[in-house]
Length: 335
Ligand code: UDP
Ligand code: MG
Image (cartoon, rainbow, N blue to C red; front, side):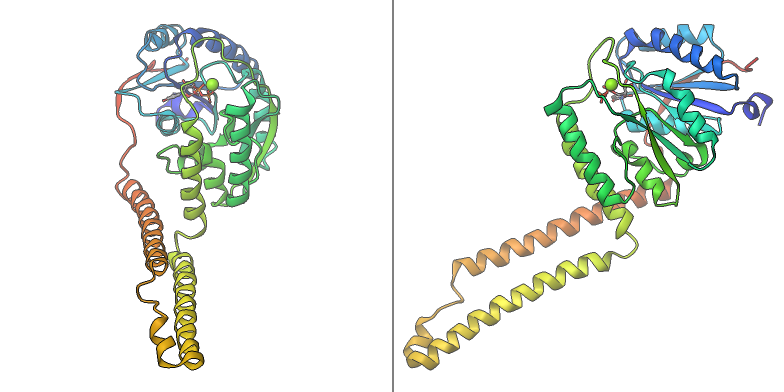
């Protein structure tokens, strides 16, 4: 480790995808706030394969500010991958993530750090109490998602989706990210016994450009929620889940079969051989359909979950990165 590496104790990680118009203003705000803190910091901007002038702007800013390090991806790998790269390259003991579009206010950073410095928490999450986005398409699904994530993961937060969060570096360096999982970091880390809290932060409208996401993200987040709750609760004992489903289904199937057989015998006793023969169950289309649906349902659930486990094994066992870097632009020595 060289000298500059040991000096930094705060890293700001920013995912950047087509934010050319927002970067200069954010950089100014950030540096003003960070200088005021008077502690050695670095800014790690991850250019997630932007197709606008973002990279040129970042290069320019880097020329002027040796504390800015720019990591550039070969293509667009997504916000989660950008965060993951930022975490991998960040050298600070505390890592703060913030969006590049100006929606988060850098002025909130000192308060996050203050709570962090009290030492009781490993993650301090921002909570946008007064969000500026449309209610139906953004805030409502997000509210539902936050409730659901809090419930099913046991780590209660009002605003999982807020990018402005502070982490102790060892926490994020030990969480393996892929897919859209970055918003689940507090939940995944909660599993390690990490202490999480939240404080209100402000939310501002985007200055330039537009959001990179649409409603489909809500669906993807919900699907990820299944994965995360499964991984958190059942991944080490899948039999408790699959076994329960299997027993329930097998049990109900058995009961239905018993009922049908019982009814047939009852007809035989009440109406004699004629009635017994007339009561046909083997050809009942409903029976066939029910059996078919149950079997298919079990197959699909099992396959989906096994697939998730395999994905996790794949990423963790191979240590395969979820991104590919083209270039790292940084100054050799920081002051
Ligand atoms: N972002 C990224 N890669 C992507 C999409 C988004 O790095 O594929 C960055 C984007 O530049 C911004 C942050 O992630 O800094 C949040 O994106 P956005 O503002 O579009 O999301 P929203 O605030 O609308 O939820
Ligand atoms: Mg945004």
